[in-house]
Length: 360
Image 1 (cartoon, rainbow, N blue to C red):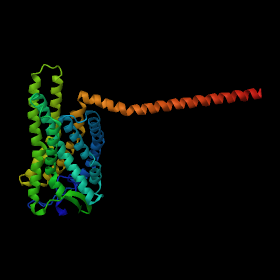
Image 2: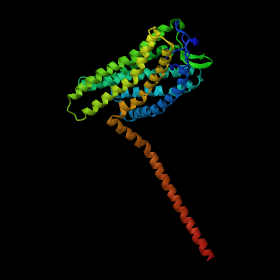
Image 3: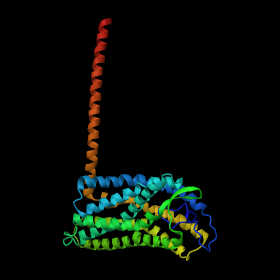
Image 4: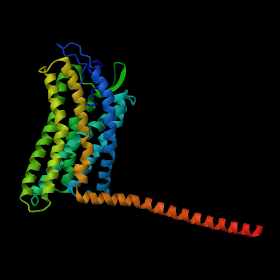
């Protein structure tokens, strides 16, 4: 089974196995793609981890401490931050794996891949829910009051977690450790007898759930929101429109390239696109574009939370409450140091005076 998998593929992208025998294809040397992944992926994974971890932790801290999850919006934001946090916590392991090999065993391979794919798909699902929630809150502000309750927020969140689990299920089931070219790996090994079908299903699922549905929902919801805001005389409407436009553009810029490559991968799988050079270019493009989508989890805290005025107010309160004890400790420490220094100086001065009077 390991002979059909490639060491350069992404942790859950089972369709990028460049060592796969394509029948009419001649053997293709993918060494350049392997070298590229070994140098590029660890750096990017590490950067996403460094920037994504504190941002999402701050969002969760503010929501839990100050917001108290009293409405549907905060429930969705908390789930989105949790998905992103779950996702970024796996990246140090993938960074090491990309540069070396898998050293943590089969059980931990399963645990990490579950966290990885649930965070990945879960984040997309809650972006959909946040878009719908904003649409209801602005376009149907009066009629949606009874629908936008904490209870419905919890129910819809559970439904989306089920959808994310379903989308992740093939990877969870077929992911395991193995050996490829003498290197220990943690990968998704689909059954060889249905390999092509599983690969096409994965590609189709990623295009539909990973881009098409979220993009359609976002465009519809935010277009209607902009129409509603344009009818409003509020002086802040232009700022809100700019923020909404930025949210849609950011999502498209970070997710569209990967889904274009995914579509090209499906054409390659169907035999429409052929050739060794094409396989090399697609392998590298798949690694780069899929890694770029990871950056979105660093931006989610900014575009969905930090840009809100009330959230920034709570964030300042959080920092103030965290820094106050430290500042008090430093002030007390400085006071104690000054007191000790003053007392020492007095004693030294008294001893000096006493010594002077003795020798005079």
